[in-house]
Length: 308
Length: 174
Image (cartoon, rainbow over the protein chains, first blue to last red):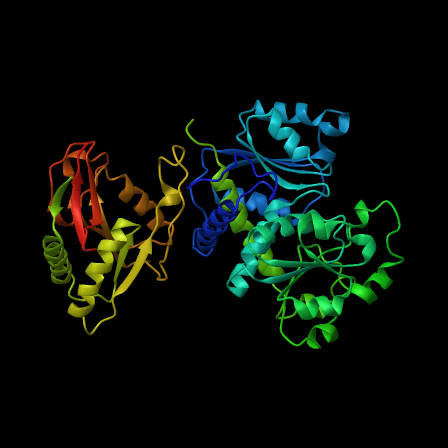
């Protein structure tokens, strides 16, 4: 059984079977991570470059650890400390790296579509680690893995995605994935941060009321306000945002049922989530991070080169 | 397709293997049985069923091992992994690996690699239902053999179900 694609550019072009295969493979890698030797030799003949044109802590560490746990050789590239700062183009940089016999590229870029462009021009397998406001496929996969692990299933689950939907690649990838797997999705946030035609375009519910949304859902995936991607004023202040859309312990405890709280990080404590919510029993934020390594191992393993 | 072991012969063969294992290991306190995915687990399930009756007083420790991530031909084909279940400390224990068919020895070599990532067993033994001895590519031999058969290299030996759903071992010649 193989993936239907050579690259992981987004969830949009994966099939339901692809997603199921990645998630079930990740379960086996999660077992590997519990062993005394948390490492398998599967990718010992593979070299991977981590090409990060944009800042990252979790995703970069997670990919790097996943690569090392698979025994791959890795090199790291950060745009700020490289020749990109001297004006080298993306394609030139990557072709130079590939000429040193690199097999796979993990890439984060602030421009939406950068990994898609690269996939058309280079022979290596490309894994999108986040491109602009487009997609962040491995985050959606690890979120789905965490939902399945915590609640048992995805199909039919009610998942709310709350916050800055407009600028969030995590939201977009999550919506694609959850809809493909048969979950119900509601997006919630201020009207200025929710794209106008999202209901029609992505077949999701829209609710501008936080309390109603939380009463409806089984799982709340809470997003960060992406101030770095906003070039106009879309809400008056972080304090006002927090009053209307921040989740406090009092609000959480007032709900009829116990819901699961997720967050892709980094958390702005006191803005979208209060500290006692982020650290509560209902939060699986750190499990998401743990699962991220297993899910990325599965993606790298399944996309690793064949027959050379 | 030629039937090598009918379901009756298969049961007899598995009974003999369980018998040999229990005679050599009278005390199973430090023994861990491990079936290799997938065919080995089918054989191991049957053997363990019998051993549980033989060792009625002691607890039979039984796990399953998957070699997918350790295959030496991984670049030829990426395969979906099977479940790995070894919830025991194997340090200083005797591990008995159980597989359906011993052919080139590459699976067993990979299984040993997996095992050593879990700890350092005192001893590892190998129990197989079918031994295709003349095709070995590694210096590996079994301690317990159900049936040794002569085959051509391109033949396939498989544990399958017959029309009534009973398990049997067949030889598929090209």
